[in-house]
Image (cartoon, rainbow, N blue to C red; front, side, top):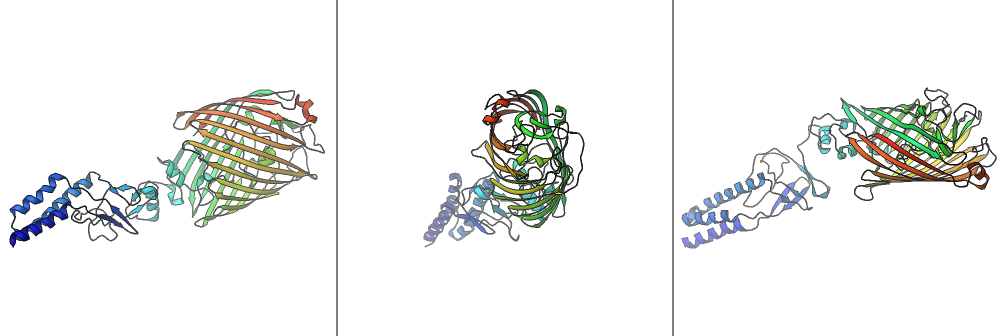
Length: 559
C-alpha cells in the first residue's frame, strides 16, 4: 500500500514538474498569455532521485522543495532576459512583483515562479506589440516626460505641451506642440498659416534655456541667373534668410517671438532678372518688370500668444512689424513643395506677397482641425528702401479659414480688402481672394513628397485677374527634385495697366543635392530650367513665344 502511494505521489510530482506550464501576465485592463518554459534535462532528473531516497510520507515536502528549485531556475532565466511572448506578438522580459503592493504586476505561473520583492511597475501595451513599463508618476508632467522617452525631472517644455530639446529624438520632435494651439508643431508654417501635419518640421540648431526653447534656421544661396531674350538679363547675386525663434510656456499655452532677416537688399534695388514677373518698384517712379524685387532686410519681427480653451482648441493673438496677415497659403519660401527653388513664383503677387507687411495684428480661434482668423494690417507694399522698417495705418482687413481634414492635407480659403496697396497707384484699392490645398506624405521609407495647388484673384477698377500655381517636390537620400507650373493674368507687363490682361504661363524644373558638413550645417548644389509662354501680342517684346531661363546655385543650410 505504501509503495503504491509512493509511486502515485512521485508520478504526480513528476507530472507537475514536466508538464507545459500555462502562465499569464495579469495587468490592469489586460491579460497576456505566456508560452511555457521547458525545464532543462539536467534539472528534470533531480526530483526522481529525491523521490527514491525519501519516505512516501515526506514526498510532499520534497515536492515543495522541487518547486522552489524550479522557481530559482525560473528567476535565473528572467535575470538574463528570457523573453515572454505576448498576445499581440511582442515580447517582454518577465518582472514579478512582491505581494502587498496594490496594482503590482501579477504573473501566476503554476509550479514555477515564486514571489519576489521588486519595485512596482504597472505596464501598458503599445501598438505593434511593444510594452512600456513605467512607475507611477509623481505628477502628470512626470508621466508625460516618461512617455516621451525622458527621465523624470529632466528639464523639458513638456509642461507647456512641448517635447524636450536636449538630446531629443525624432519621436520627441513629433510630440512637440505648436505655438498657437494644442496640435502638432509641423502644422505651423509662415505667419499663422497652416500646412499638413505630415510635413517635415522646420529644422535647425535648438537649445533649451530654462523653460525657453530657442531655435535658429537659415539658408544662404549664391546664384547665377540667366534669362533669355531682349527682356532677359544675367546676374550673380546672394539671397536667403536667417530666422531665430524663442518660445516659453504661458498659462495653458505659449508665447513666441520670431525674427527673420534677409540678405536680399545686397543684390540692389532692382532685384534679379525673372521673366514675366512684376510688382513693386526700384526707384519710386517706375514698376519692376521681368524682375523679382529684393525682399526687405527685416522680413519678420513678430510675437504671438496663445491659450488653450479645451484639449483640442485654443485662442491666439499674433502681431508683427513686419509680419504676415491671415491671407493665402504659406509664403513660397516656406511651402515645402517649392522651398528648395531659388527663384520666386510669377504668381507671387496673386498668392502670398503679403508675407512682408509692415504692421499686422491677427486674432484667431482653433477648433481641433479648423482655424478661423482675421487680421487688420497695413496693405501698402514695401517701397524701394529695403533696409528700414516702415509704418502705416492698419486700415486693411483679411479673413482666413483653414482646415486640415487629414494629417496629409491642409486647405485654406481667404479674402482681403487692400487699401491703397500699390505705391505707384495711389488711391486704388484691391479685393483679393485665395484658395489652396497643400499635401505632404512619405510615399515610401526614405522618401518624402509635397505638393501645392493654389489660386488667387486680384480685383480692382472692375477687373478680375486670376493666378494659378501647381508645385511639387520629392526628397530622397540628399536629393530634392522640384517643379512648378503657373498661369497669371498680368496687366503690367507693358509698363502700364492695360484694359485687358495677358495670360502668360511658366513651367520650371530643378534639382539640388545636399551634403551634410556638420551636425547643423549642409551644403548643396543645384540648378533649374524654366520655360515661359507668352501670347502673340507679347512675342515681339520677348523675342519669341517661349523664352527660357536657367539658374545654377550653391547653398548653405542650417538644419
